[in-house]
Length: 172
Image 1 (tube, helix red, strand yellow):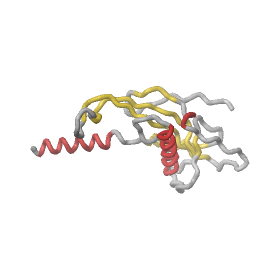
Image 2: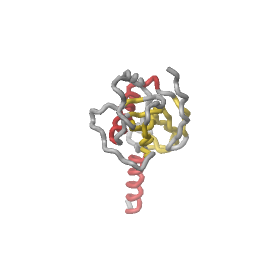
Image 3: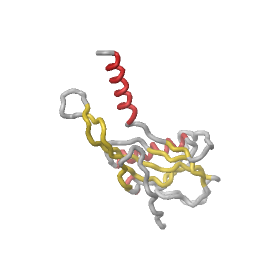
Image 4: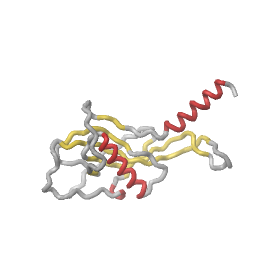
């Protein structure tokens, strides 16, 4: 194998391994905050909150090939961990997105590891990490937990970084 062929193969493998698994964080402010402790609570909201807050970043969970309640629960925990690392107190406007594309996919028709061109889809959650301007009042009732079934389904995205329309707020 020539040196050029080996370099091309190594570059292709690196792009294949790292390109599809990247998650995105889009900072919405120049300020950076200290990460919260691992046991710090991070609230989850399907809509926005009335309490004064600062939007820190748009965050995505890890992408998954399936959309099951167990995976959604893990993706919600992933959003909480990402918000916690950014110094966020909560994640608002959580929605479920699907990324469809065409590229290299595993070829199940061969008895060895190989790839072919094909269609794929990945499911992930997106939300906005926020930081409350003042600590939430202790007298307020506890917020209901976001259940995987409560997350609104959004339109399918045909790009690598899909955007979603804001869901309409629910009335209590």
